[in-house]
Length: 635
Image 1 (cartoon, rainbow, N blue to C red):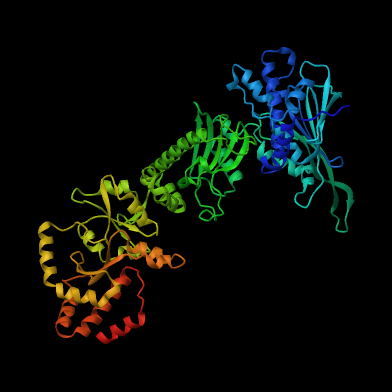
Image 2 (cartoon, helix red, strand yellow):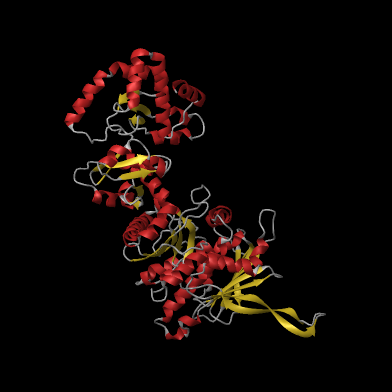
């Protein structure tokens, strides 16, 4: 029979498809099964109005058969089938989609899930096959036809024998190469895995022969008197796909317990999630989602190796295993699936053609996750605290990232250690406890709670009876600066100078006292040189002699964070340090006396006080030897 040629543009597209369009060769099975599902959908739709079809929904199925010796993979369906003209039109012209045309002609197209739109999926078979044979008999036709091609050189169409309506696609698998082992596609385990991965939720049963091994008694015994057994392998045809995904089932069937089982199995977690989020949205973009908020972070969560994103399906067929665009980076810990029939997919169905629908879904899911976390914080604080221990840092990163774009979304989810009952608290709860006289939300920043609570500057705040937040993570003060305020209350560090706790009269008295000590303060500043930017008398210290505070946007904790950065960049970022001395402390009297009678002694006292202030602020003392020598000289 004469070989027919693909059109010139079709030849180029076929070559492009085989070598470029599809990222993974394994996609071929998803595409062929999706086409089989489309063919069944068409006949199932026809059966609604044509009683001659003679098949109920339970009769439809897709068969996958492997022949290792013949090196073939065959996918058969009992769908609508193809006539000779259909073969010429749909298989002879690449990118002509019968599914798209069929869907376009239906008045109720939105009620029929047709996956194929571009008419190129069938040709993905050539990525793994050196020859593809299609035998098909169209519904209502007596004659079957065979289409056969070995690639871009062309194809043949001839009469064939096929007793039933439907289509068989027979793929002759290529020989193995150094780059790829094509023989794996002839292994039952491999094909079954691919069906579970990509086509598990195709809504018609996908059946294949699966080998089972049993051990049966032989009737003999060994030297110990034990009965001997031998393996007996038999093959059974079984359905290997789930068909109806759990997120498509009613809640009466998809109970929380079953959803948790699904989560543990698919996302490899041993812990129950702290929350399950179900979404069934209808509108311009319809979709279903089943999301989970984990209890613990995976070992690699805060590493570059972690792959965030939700599994993305279109009408039950997996498009992307991890789609990062469905949730913002701040919620990258959320696991789950999204399934929508309305996605605009690209030609290979591996990625999205444009993201309008995706943005709509992502915006809705973002609000759903925020709402669920807010509810969890209120109704089950213990569960929320477990979540916060695992992912609180991620929420904080979300506030700081993208120039604070998500701070309004996330600020109510924040929790910090607090002096109130010595437990975690939200900013909302902190503000609700503030007395009317309190102007600011006060926090103390250090490497741990004990150090933060021990900062000398906290004494004045405590004396007023005000609550303190303890910032103990590197990111905390960056969060504070990005937020700046919460419900009109500015966040203020106890180490940031004026705490707004003095009256105007008290401030005037302090200015007079500072002016009287100007010569001493200038001497101290000159003595300490580059160690501090300024020296001041402190009117917030109570029992402590000194403390280290800062002026400007770079805090002491930020300085310590930048010091840990590799290279020289971190060394250049410094807080504007201010040494504060308590004029009511006895040390100040000794310092004043030394300044008036022994400048060398006064200089040593100044260096010791500066080193002590650094230690209290968890800052490094550069010259420990000089510090200890000065202490010994003064004793």
